[in-house]
Length: 248
Image (cartoon, rainbow, N blue to C red):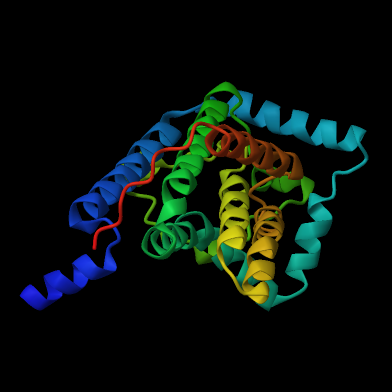
C-alpha cells in the first residue's frame, strides 16, 4: 500500500489533495450542469417555434444544408456508427480524458483549460434558459432523422434521467463549444505535428457529427463556437494565476 501511495504522489503533480479537489469540482459541476440543463427551457411550444425560426433564418441565407449532411452520412453504415459514437463520447469521455492528461502532463495549462470549459458550459446553460430550441431531429416531417435512436442505451423510465435530459437544449451546441476548446488547447500543448493536426481537425469532425446525427443546426454550431471563443478570451486574457510549485 505504501508503494502505491508513493507512486501516486510521484504521478500527481500537486499531490492527492489537489487531485481530489479537481475531481470534486469537475463532477460537482457536471451534476449541477445536468440538473440545471434538465430544468432549463422546457417550453415545448417555444422550443419548436425557435427551431422553425432557426430554419427560416438559414433558408434566408440560402444555407439550410443539414438534410444534405444527413443524407451523406446515411450513405455509409460506417459513417453512421462513427458519428453516433462520436456524439456520445465527445463531450464528456474525450473531454474528461483530455482534462486528465493535461492535469498530469501539462499541469501549467490545466487551470485555464478547466476554467474555459466551465465558463463555456455556464454560458451555454444561460442560452438554454433564454432560447430553448428544438433540434432538427424533432422535425421528422421535414425529413430529419434521429440517427442516435438505435444506439440509445438509456432507460427512459428513470425519473432522474428524464429530469436531467432536455430535448430542447440545442442553442448553442455545447458539443461544438467543448470540441473547439479541447482541439485548440490540445493542439497548442502537444509537440508532434501529426498530433497537432489531429487535434485541430477534432472540432470540425464533431461539428459534422452533431449535424449528421440530427442534433443541431449549423447555426447552433456557430453559436457554440462563439461561446467557446468568448470563454477562451475571458479566461486566457485575464490576469494570470500565480503557478503553484510542483511537488517534489
